[in-house]
Amino acid sequence: MFCQIFFLSLFSICNSILIAKVQNHIIVGDMYNNLFNVTQDQCICEMIKVNDTISALNYFSTNQTCQLFRSNISTIYIEFYSNSTFVFINQSSISILNIQEYQSSTSTSTPTTISSTTTSTSAHSLFLNQTTYPAGVMSWSVAVIDVNNDNKLDIIVANYNSNNVGILLNAGNGTFSAQTTYSVGTNPSSVAVADVNSDNKPDIIVTNSGSNNIGILFNTGNDTFNAQTTYSVGTDPWSVSVIDVNSDNKPDIIVANYGSNTVSVLLNAGSGIFNAQTAYLVSYYPISVAVVDVNNDNRPDIIVANFDSNNVGILLNTGSGTFNAQTAYLVDTNPVSVAVVDVNNDNKSDIIIANYGSNTVGVLLNTGSGTFNAQTTYSVGINPISVAVVDVNSDNKPDIIVANYGSNNVGVLLNTGNCTFNAQTTYSVSSNPVSVVVADVNNDSKPDIVVANSGSNNIAVLLNY
Image (cartoon, rainbow, N blue to C red; front, side):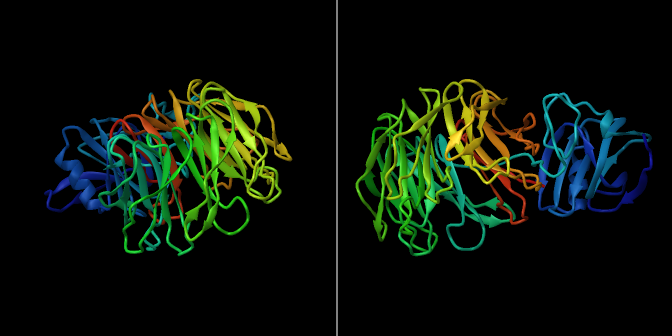
């Protein structure tokens, strides 16, 4: 326990009031609200204005972020955190305890290290509360890429029940403009962004699940996109990936057709024109597709999550843009999302799967030559539906980020470095998160979380600090 406190008077538009500050520390507790791009004085004024319910705050000078905390407290828990200040008011005396004496009843997004059997958090891997941006009806799939060449990552969303895609341009500092929408086919379910016509402008590719086609919206170069050009695929196309599979330096399109039990490959013929699909039979209800070289032959292979077969299928690339029949690996119930990343630093790409019906994520380590061990599973929230794998705490080990559809949160499972992952730490989002992407949207060299919340018709951004 330690009790070194510095009292001072703040003179501002809020009148003179006695406050206390502790430099280079943060308070741990139940956060009430986040404020962005504010000064410390503005943050303190906000605390004073609502003093009936808020009595303390954290202020982070590096990104001008303010965290407000509820309740009039006589005992607080703090820990060291550089370039930060915690402030409280109207306390004649207060007890300050070390973080190790704190036991949280719920997961929070404060920078803490908590001894718990169910959560694990690092000061370098925490995220602020979500900031939301309106999208279309049932925002279903999200991609994050710079579409207007301003070196800021923009958000592209497929709005399933609006039959459009929305583009939210990055306004700087991790904030986004209102979406601009473009009509596509019926029930767009997945979106990818890649330059498919070699003009150095990223284009939008969308699966129209109700129209049994894909749409391509070419980037005009002035913050707008042309109307879609469509290509027929299988029944109920649900997931799309865009990558060069035949080594001709032109990105091709790969689609998982949920209703046809196939994956489609549409080879790029040049100038953004695509050949008719070649279909490959997989297992029942393929719902998510990734395209990554898993056998180190410099040819990207197809990895597909087969929802109703409870397996993951791997179709090895033969070298000419054609693929072998799938090899299937059993996973848990209803695999719904797949990511392929080397998680154990052996230069072999591993498979990470979200098992919707089992409330788990599975990790299948690559044994070499495109074969995989049986999955190791980790418990997450209710109905995990989307998974991303990115190093979020700058330790050079890729971590797992999962959208838990039924829990209305995202879980972060930190990589321990010994082929295992810690239990998830959760961050609340809006209703029914269905798609998650991890990318640095505010140019601070720390990856942030972007989520499509299908039940709330919005996009959530959780900044990493």
